[in-house]
Length: 171
Image (tube, rainbow, N blue to C red; front, side):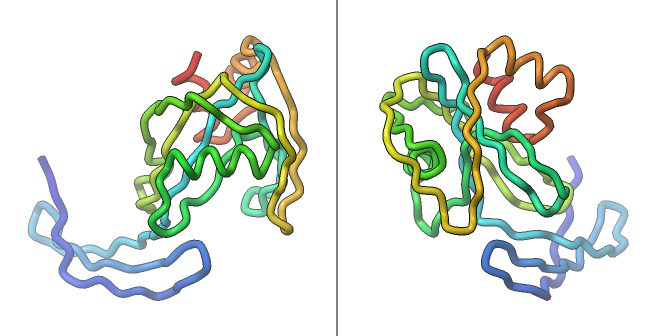
C-alpha cells in the first residue's frame, strides 16, 4: 500500500466555502511532488420520495454553466450533524420535512484533489411544508417516478455525482 508523507502544507486561498492548499509530499519512490488540495467542510444530500415520486431540484451551477437536476443537498455547517443537515436542506429547498431518515453511506466525489465528503440519506416518509431557499438560490422542484429517474441516470440526463450515487444506492 502506497502512502504520501506531507513535508509541508501551505494555504494559498481561504474562501467562504473552500480553502486551497498546496502540500509538498514525499512519494513512494523517495522523490517529492506537490499536491493542490481543495479543503471542503463536506455536505449532505437526501433521496426524498413522496407518493412514489423522487423529489429533485433543478438549479444553475456556475462552475459548469448549466442548470442541472440534483438531489436536495447542501454544505455542512461547522459542527453540524450530517443527518440534521440533510433534513434541513430538504426542508429549505423543497419544503418537505423528512421523518424516518436512513443513511445510505458517504462518498468522496473528487478525491484526486479535494477532501470533500458527501453523506447520503433516504426518506420516503415526508410531510409537506413551505420551502425557504437561501436568498441567492433559484430552485425549481421537479418530481419523477423511480423508473424515470433511473432512466435519466442511464441516459446521462442526470450527471451530478452525488445524485447518481444516491439514486443508485436507493433503487
